[in-house]
Image 1 (cartoon, rainbow, N blue to C red):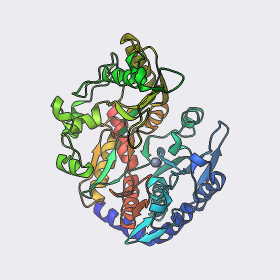
Image 2 (cartoon, helix red, strand yellow):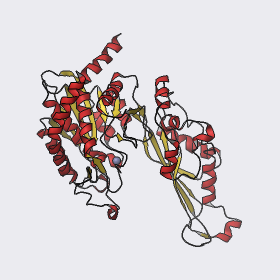
Image 3 (tube, protein in one colour):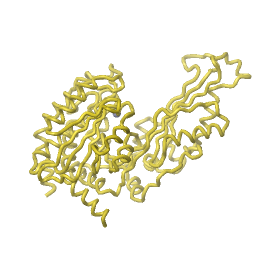
Image 4 (cartoon, rainbow, N blue to C red):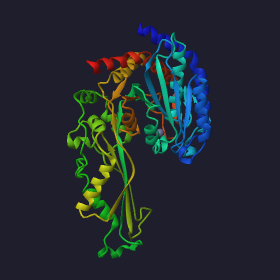
Length: 469
Ligand SMILES: [Zn+2]
């Protein structure tokens, strides 16, 4: 029965996919670069038109500042369950295309090469929106139409850190109300397994500055003048030991322990240490070895503290004997559920003071909390099972990604489980030149979403039964 259904979804998808790719190309021709405030009104109009062309309703929300948020709605069909709603989260903005000379084609002129569609934003995240709308078109052709209500939240500031997303979600909580959410991204790994996540790490991105003087000095004064670069390096050295343990008191406060199920899932994740070492050309063993930690566990369950860059004095060619007036470091902490970026900032400030570094200023540049859906939720199992039925290789569903995004606000405001899946692949090159999506992956992704949606109401009813038991 289900195999038959997958089969008819496959052939319906095959019929509509060519038209969808043309629509996607039009969408990709819009250079929607949020960082440069480019093509925002045209793109908003385009997205509204997409929803209307597919038979849906839409609303442009722009009363709370920032680039508008587009809301889309498709009601359940006559045989569908109008009590159940799935929400898709997407963004219509893209990253700047630079460096332009590394592109093999024009970034905003979509080009098909060897079965891949190449353009800025195709993988992150315009391709996924069109794949989702294509799944709706497929379902509209099945007897009974859409199996449930479908909502969309398409924002236009994801690539600049979603600064206005939280207020919109809060204000329009009822409009976006849903039973579950499919997040914006995903794709296949180096072994062609589709990789999905049910959560995301948070972030505390900070800048630490040490100012020692008004001007750079002749380094001979190093005999009696303190050095901002040394001070900053010494301060940093008090924050983490060589085993990668973070020594800032309170840093690990509040961390939610993973469940037995989550631990088991993570211990079975694919991880090829040699491949990682080769990929990056690593010169030292993985840092997890020193602590005897499984890198999978570190990736999913442990917070990090990373020096992203240090700037001070002279680093050009040859020698310049200088005592720098200041030193600056960018520090990112990837957080896990239970940690709060503002608390992290406070603990670091307190730590520096306690260690005699009260002259070092710390500023939080951006903060986001982590989110992890309940891995036991039937929705999580349903997305995984339907992916297993559609994709050739076994899919991988990680409790939370090692990366970051504004998922916490969705989970918190809407109280829904969130799973991220998409049509990218290992060489999608999001944010980099020659970004691409393989057309075959696009089509397969549509089939998965359509098939997943057909069983969505039943899977969610399972949840109601569990809850009332
Ligand atoms: Zn992105």
